[in-house]
Image (cartoon, rainbow, N blue to C red):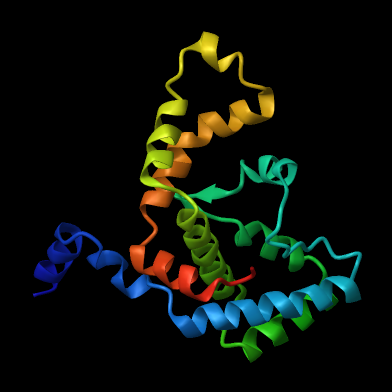
Length: 182
């Protein structure tokens, strides 16, 4: 019986992700935490924590090396790791997390990464994904004409596209409806 269930998970598209779909309450709790984190960042300016979802191009380029892990978006893992290095910040952060339904730093980072991925995917068309996949296969002569920061992004195109293709349509629909952090 267990073998049959495992086989179904691998054969039915999306079945393995059904349990991982974002829930409205998770997104609402995520937003509450993010709003509370702004206050913590002000209270502990020496903490190396940054929970600002409005990042500019240069910041995004700096995050490219850590932004993807195991084929998924990983923007909150590094932020949470940095936050945990400051004892007072991490103590207050854990109170906020637990008060908003998150049992651990990892559970918050997981939901945050899924929200971020769905927000990114909501902004991308299927044509965008196809173009991203093709960018890394440009001839060297064409790749050399792309400015260095953008070249790094072009080389990551297939990785980004693959991660975006894994985002469940239900998550995208939910973030479009809820518009978190906008």
